[in-house]
Length: 200
Image (cartoon, rainbow, N blue to C red; front, side, top):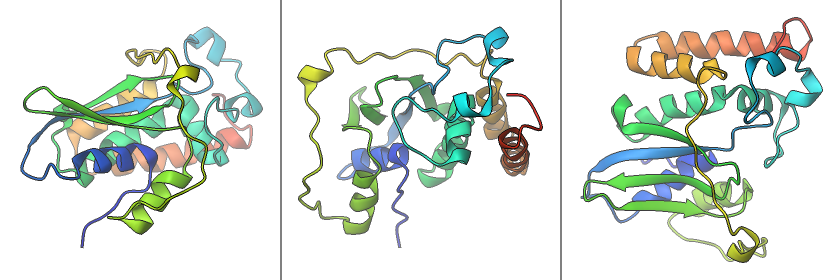
């Protein structure tokens, strides 16, 4: 029984792999919006309060995942998930910042070709895709119009400022219990931050 992912990034990878079962993956590219503090430096983040961190620019999410997005921990956890979902080595997983959240993730194959899954940022589509797979169901959701998005940007994540992504990458490479420890520590840290017990 296949596992059909629902998270937008893993759904995107899954969709890119349909029909590619005989073609090995060279790498996957997970896209990250960068969260509400994209481009900010540590001296700004010191003063961040709960309400600021909960304001995501592209997605409407619950408190926990909103904080994980603000710290980029969500992308680190997605790297770990992708390793297991798609049977990858850590060095086959790359993260790029893509502020528009139109490309939900990409797969690069051994010939250098890259497939991307695109669409407006809306969780209804990956959830519906997983439930109806292998069919696609007609919807009345808003459609992507490239004329409204003339520029799609990509950048390296700032792992010096957003250290959670570096910690998650380290846990991914170390393996063993490290990803579980990372996740548990993050759960407690987010719980404390949401109750104003620790700083950002």
